[in-house]
Structure formats: structure tokens, C-alpha cells
Image (cartoon, rainbow, N blue to C red; front, side):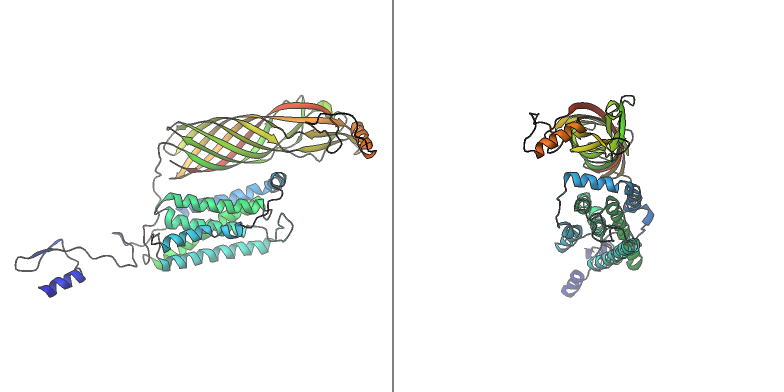
Length: 472
């Protein structure tokens, strides 16, 4: 009997819960443990991996399409960078691009199982990286786009960004969909910082970064598709992500990144539009203390149309007009109204401060002769924002938000005639600075000339789309 008991303990039999071994002895036997290289769940069916139904697949194609659209704003985006962060030069993005992958293998090394075993994960990651590198470098050297810093002709798409989003998608599939969505948020946040840093370092255009993100995501999805065909159920540790109904919480707190187009509402009888509106970016977040009410804020940077009083342009026109770059910070009340489980209507009212970047224009006649200069001030002013939005919840912690904001901004500018400019310059060259002037505003840089000053309220409209991390 001792030998039988030892055998039963060392190698459990697959049997019913109650098994009789004779002599009236009844034993309760546990079922066999599944092999270590198979899925530890009742069903051992091959993974039903639908590439086209993956949320990340759809996001990847969406980013590539968005990159094609945003290519028209590449020069405007670089202008914002040159105005606000002209000396930004750091190399942390060379290492940050690998950080989501480092997190994935650190979790696995500490014994936290993800979707795949070590063997399966290594093969899957190698296939994903191979697809990404092949796609990126084929386009880079086939297209030959000049980098914004003028260094080389291999700008499009961004390889750093593609690598970062490949790594982030691996982290998302291994741990974000099986352990906690916070791993997905962490991975894609690090990848986004990598992409933004490439643009801030003046190494890539905006469209390079956005398309690179899409390429990285799709490369990983293809890598998992191929690996699942190769391995079947072998080495599968957790269930494959399925297309499931979204689980929606009660308090829709969020942090989101948006991109928008700025328009201008103005009196066409009084003002002349001398430069068109352009692109804008925002970081917005809100904490909801109930299902409907919350508090939060937004930081925006964008290029707004330049308008000038028509009376100032009766004899000439603006030479090489450019939009006005503006930075604003605001906070206020947010409102949320669920239209359905996956569609939410939002509203907000914000108050804050805004500041234009310094801008100087030359007013010239038909022959190119200088008539006057117009200088835009860069002092802070009050800004008011009222906005409406429609959010589509596409994942447990992911939303896409379409929004429209009505912004009330002020712009101060000064008109200095050519005679005043030349006279001040002559006095300056003669060694004497002409007259007293208001130090709070310098009409023409370096001359000390204060022209006639104007202050105008303007009402830009912002139409955009944002991706939100939902913190239910």
C-alpha cells in the first residue's frame, strides 16, 4: 500500500473525483496538470487571431492615414518648435525607444507571465522587429526625404518612433490585455514621448513621426499573426485577446493628446486677413468626481490667423505674412453626458492665460518699398474657452474624441511708420537714442521706436481630434 500511495502522490492519475481501489478504500484524485508548454486554460483550441479586428491594427492604419493628412502641416509644426524650443537638443530618445520592450522582459524575468512563453515571445518579437526594420528602411532609402535639420535624406518614416511603438504594442499584447491596462498606457506613453522628442530634436517632420507609429503597431500585429500560425497553442500562457464588449466605468476621468485646425472669426469689413490659420496641439485632462461633473485643464500651442486693420494697409500689403504662434494654459469645469455606453457628449468652460510669440511684419508698397512695420506683443492676456466634444469609447481605457473649441484671445500690436523707423535708426547710428519711449513695448526691435498701439480681441475656432487615455 505504501508503494501505491507513493506512486499516486508522485504521478496523479486522470480519473474521476471519487475512485475506488478496492477494499472499500476511496481516494479523491486531482486532474492532471496541463503541460508547461500549453495554455493553462480548459480550451486548447488554436488561437482565433483576427488581424483586422484587433483594435491596434485599426489604430495603426489610422495613424498612417493621419500622417498623410498631417504632412501638409509639417512646416507649420517646425515653426512652432523653432519659436518655443529652438535649442532643444537631447539624445534620451535613442534609449527611450527600447523602454517598453525592456519593461516587458523585466516583468517576465520577475516571473510575471504574459501572453507567451519565453521561446514563443522571442520568436514573435524577432519577427515583429524584422518586419518593422524592413518596412522602415525600404521606405527611408527608397523615398529619400530630407530631414528638417538638413542633415540626411532618410527622414520618412521615423525609425525611432517605429521601434518605440513596436515595443509598446508588444507590452500591450503581453501584459496590457492580460494583466492590467496600465501596462498599455505606460508603453504607449513612453512611445509617444519618443516620437514627440524626435520632432522637438528637429530630426523628423510631424508626418514622419505619425506614420512611424503606425508602421510600428502594424509590424507587431503581423508578427503576432505569423507567430500564432507557427506555434498554435504551444507556449501560449494566457488567452488570446478577443473582440469583447467595452467595459465602461462611471467616472470618465481622462488625459488626452489632440491635434486641431484653427480658424478665425473676424469682422471682414474692418479687418484684412493677411495670413491663414494653421495647426494646433493640445494636452487636456480632467478628473471627474461624479459621472457628469469634473475639473481639469488644457495646455495648447498653435498657429492662429493674423488680421490687421484695413486702414493700416491702404497703401500696401504685408510682406511674407505668417500666422501668429500662441501658447495658452487654462483650467475650469468639465461636463460629461453619456449618450450610450460607448458615446459620450462633453462640454467645458475654461479660464486661463495666453501669450503670443513675438512677430514682426513689414508693410511694403507695390514696388517693395518699406512703408511701416507691425510688431505683435508677447505679453500675457486673459483667455476664455468654451468647448463641445463627442467621445467614442473604443477600448476599456481608450477613447477617440472629436472636439470644437471657441477661444477668446487678445492680440496687441504696434504700427511704426518707415519714417519713424529710419529716423530712430539714424539717431542710433549717430550715438544718441532719440527721445523717451515706453519701455513696456518696443515698436521696432533695437531702435526704441514705439508706434501707434492696437489691442484686438479675436475669436479663433478650433476643430480637432484627440486620443484619450480613460482613467475610469
